[in-house]
Length: 86
Image (tube, rainbow, N blue to C red; front, side, top):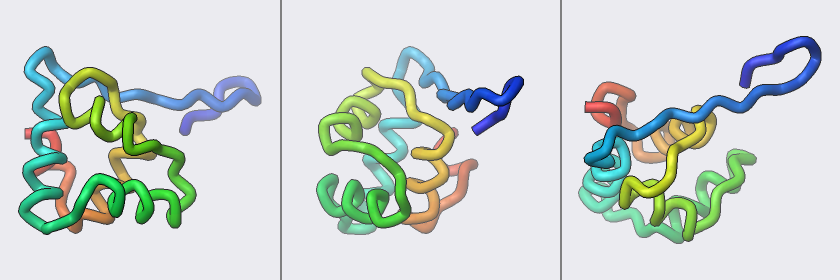
């Protein structure tokens, strides 16, 4: 989050037209044996608001991911930004 004149601005990371961020999230999540519902639950425990439907859209490249969500996903999947963004 970035504060701008007292207001909070929440930044999104745009996926390219191929949806590579979402595809990478899905690939890593499946390799770790973590289901979508489980990942959403783990993110909720971190205080990160995301629904399963939102995660599905992110993984399909249909929705941008918020910086806070990407950080939480990175932490829960035990991966790096480099792996998520390649």
